[in-house]
Image 1 (cartoon, rainbow, N blue to C red):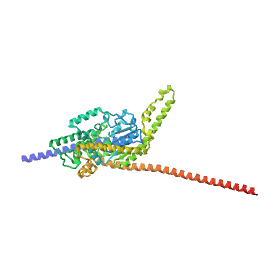
Image 2: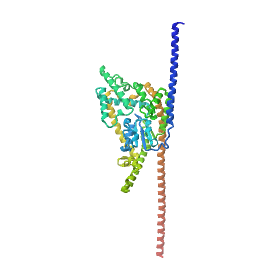
Image 3: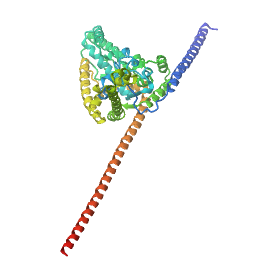
Image 4: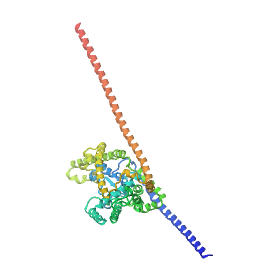
Length: 491
């Protein structure tokens, strides 16, 4: 046989073997991943559900999905409700926070659902807010740029990095750079911004050719480059689903990394993760929507806020009762009075620090305080954002500018976040049911009040009518008797 033909057949054979081996390897890898994901999903779905998910438990865990408006709920709702003594310290700082060592009633964090493994499950209520996935990707990109741009006051990246490290070492607070996911996204974007600034200086570039802030290559990483980067695939895309499922790269679950990698490699396995995330939304006390801002806030105040107020009042009454008992007891019995349950009650409620109790707060008061707070918070956020983006002018992110992003990029974002899109639709259904139930309860209360008021009115008018009749009869009787006496006198 011709050597050339032999060589061609050999190449063909080797190609066939390579395809067969790759196919076999893929099949083995898929089978392995399928077993890993199924095992995790089945164990998660078998978790015992709470008896009454509509009732607030001892601990409120606010699972804060980034860029959903959760910060306003934290500052303008929860901090108005809970005194500092009941807030879990360093909530957002995973590196220095162990929830099992804290006696607290409020936990607000970007940590994913796997945090529940460190909490008393049957005594914990979970709440969250979800956002349209496309808008959330836009907002994540914009905030990454905004925070990273703050470092451009430094002459170079080394100086910025060293200064940030020194400040974080000195401060007792929690830096954005300590919080997931920004501890990954901001340094990545910061490095990119400095590299582009250095490139402009090297080229002597003073004029920017693009007018599209999402595609201003000389100034900022373009949005399309951002969403295609491996870091975005690891942290941003389908981030809400992975966070609610407890599978982020910040997870406490040992197998989370392998499960997440398998789902990213074999997208069909994502359906199992989606089912777990949906079940966890079902079991939550409250699920809000960023886009339904007014309705979500009102519902939060009525569903969550009202129960927190009631719970803290009950705790305060118990504490005061305990204090009264102690004051009545004899000195030699003091040690006996300090039982474990009494001590726990004292730790739970501290009336002198409890604003809700001190001001006798109602849901209406809470909503009024929320409106004032959110206005002030938004003003401060706008000022900080404007100051930051001025350092990378003419970049200016606006809602109007988003409309000019190409359909191809928008479709790519949707495709990369297909799990989040499905979870968001499911959250919308939950929200509609919550809203209906909330309105039904509200109408029910109104009906009871109306029935009581109508009954009261009817009773009042009945008594008034009877009274007037009796008075009329009495007057008539007196008049008749008087007339008879007058007739007797005349006779």
